[in-house]
Image 1: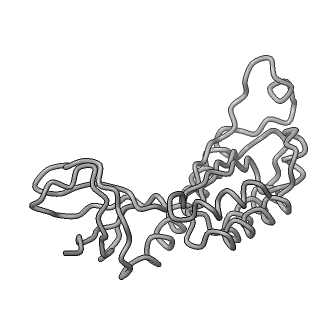
Image 2 (image 1 turned 180 degrees about the vertical axis):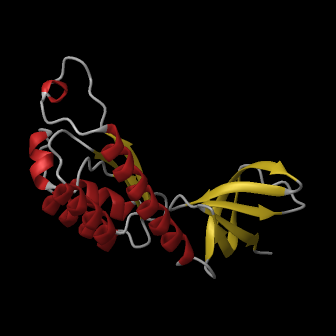
Length: 194
């Protein structure tokens, strides 16, 4: 709850927060010795969204942990869709020598892990596009970091959307109000307000 208070106070500065979630299955989280459940995670997300509207929520999800059933995977997938992340970083589980998980007999086949990874990446791409699309038409402050060529500048909004915009003025290290015109391939395209 202290995190929520900090986020609320810094709403205009920080709209991007990374909350790790290795699985959307509380059964798997327990096997991974995580000290939270998916239900607790969802409560935290709801509080953050209430405190900081328009926040960008990303997460890491490991698929294919030993013993993960199809039911466990589908629970993780459904949970990710319920939250509506702006991005999921997906990792197939890989055994690390000397860890208890690596010694388990219920390892999943690589083909299963790769199929689940691919499926979850597809879900992530769809959610990223939905997150970006809801900002089309809005005017947002963008910190432009650099020119990437042909008078096109690249920067980020306060909720960590990558934005490209044209300008004949040097926008390097400048915060400029920018109207979001369109989105494609995990990026927004905008027009700097006069």
